[in-house]
Image (cartoon, rainbow, N blue to C red; front, side, top):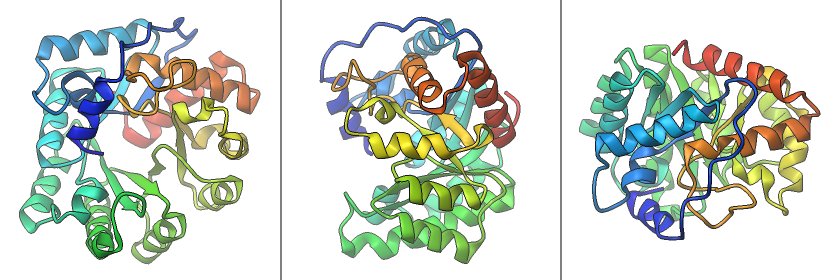
Length: 288
């Protein structure tokens, strides 16, 4: 994703209303407050971001992971996590940024520096994208992915993976390098077969609003396979807005839609699922 993509997302319509609060606290394991609140043209004011965080807390989501996609947004994410106790940060160069040449030595060194900060608990989103980046950028993507895996392992933090149309390649790189102790497939997009391969390796599958889409039957089959302790939910806001608001901008406060969809798919009591998601998030990212 990019800031320009975020700006387009913000122009799609009015923000949906907040859902009914969850019965127990849950988590948004992957969100982009800078893009969702600010967009391409400006950095959001602290008061605007605070309002968005408070709205998530009000519906039962007091734990959030703010994710960087380039050096600037990673620095912003780390600063937000230092300022707000509800937020932890993930830092990285997005694979599409890497494919466009952003994974310079200086940029990777800054991600390495940020990953050592106490409120930065993950390196990501990194990975491979065979959809938006053409073949001429794949080698750079893979080199960046390998560098991010090394950073995550050296700092003892989680790895958050962006995988688009690159399932086999992602697993190959992880096997080559050795995955960190905690590895999350952000916005899981595979089928049941790929889910089994990830589950066998101990990876955590994070599901977004796509779980609610009418054409996502194979995704729901994949979610139903995962043990509760290998599941997370996310918004990826402002992207992937759940039904019935698909096509409008997403927000962290809408994550209860994904939580309820996951409860239906797994046949799990909603309160039990919230507790399991919180426990998994704290195992992967540490305590808030």
